[in-house]
Figure 1 (cartoon, rainbow, N blue to C red):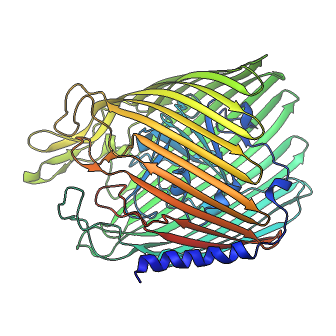
Figure 2: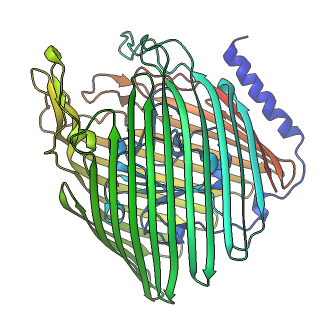
Length: 637
């Protein structure tokens, strides 16, 4: 019997007793559903049904069904989201929102930006889903709300919080799965006498799988390959503390601290390659209702990201301090105006001594949200003033119209931008002799975008349908490595692209059965009229690592205390290079889930990913997980 078949039979054995031992318990349907409250679309709390824009919320139930998965795997099951990893969740990973470059998605923890302005990447390995209460995804350019990086949209990761007037609650999870993956988490939360609090801790360890393939897609030997298992270990801590010292006045403290040791392959030398990542995010806030129509939110955010590559003795640390003051005025129940002032300080430290290591930004924004009968409106304008670039002005206008109580149509237009990274601008000159040289380019322009979109939606208590069309034109795209004939290289603004797409999504609740479906059709085109030094292929080529078709189908069925689910995902062909010479084949994945409630406090969840053991590639030369199972035991007091 093959090892692959053994794993599949073992997973079936885990699922079988759940089906034959189901007993009566309280079903999810018996619990009144609370309306989702979101903050990302307008920077103020509002019901999801009133949010303007293409917004998705990944809630506690979805997170609970994916205990063994990484944050990117969870995000990747949402409409309009694709991702890549270089051999596992601990390796370099990228997220493509509506096909935009990875640097074009702003990633937040509790509203604090964590995009790395030194390298341009986002470290997803330190984002532990066990610490997360929900994830809000806002698609479409949002720089008029958040500034740089939000060309494709925003992903806001909300950690677990305490709630007012709730007694002490304790929860715990422990799980084990394929690749000797073990995960555990523990938390508590509550509120009493004006105080609210929460504390969560998590740990994970996995031996992993070989990150690299022996050969690349074109059949050549892979120079990065080293035959071993590339695993990881991580721990995370999150907490909140709040005090409502008077009616409408609250002081709050939020903290997140996580570290991951991740293995990767770098060829035979060095044979043991690994990196330490650390992500810290702290926030102190004062929320005050000054009058019945005026609320003030004063906040100080501090984030620190560390990267320590032990194989190549490369260390990078980035510190960001942000001061913000949001004043929201609501003189009428149907109209709201927010005035935002922000000051941001970025500081970089690296083994590469950059020509400049700091940058300050002052920003001001106006955000209007209103409703006149069936017409819903949101408009915003923002100016960001950079010490090294001057002013960047962005704006947005969105209109939704309720045709009936169930049908809605809408359209929006917005602009976005992304500032070049410290590495793009200020990387020190390095002479490689006959191999050429490299240096940063302080004359780079910011990348800019113009996005338009339209949608039609249908929503009732049991059914949700939506169709969204969008077009995002991005100019001054930065190629970080453009070389002359003598291989003297630098970063340059050499590209422009247009991303056109259609997203269709729907869900229907049949009572004990829920069906979900989505389809993404994407046309990510390079608009350059001619190639640039051989690194970009010219007009009409497809941007790399974006599939033009992605389909998701999911079904979930409850039998008293037992919940069974199945998922199907199809991802089309992609190119592994900008020149469109290396093609990666499409693939289909089948996943199964099961959950059984022994009581209101104790339950077990099983997830079996890639049931058929599909061998597929996300990044040329790198492996992806085979058929894998994770079993989690959950307890709540």
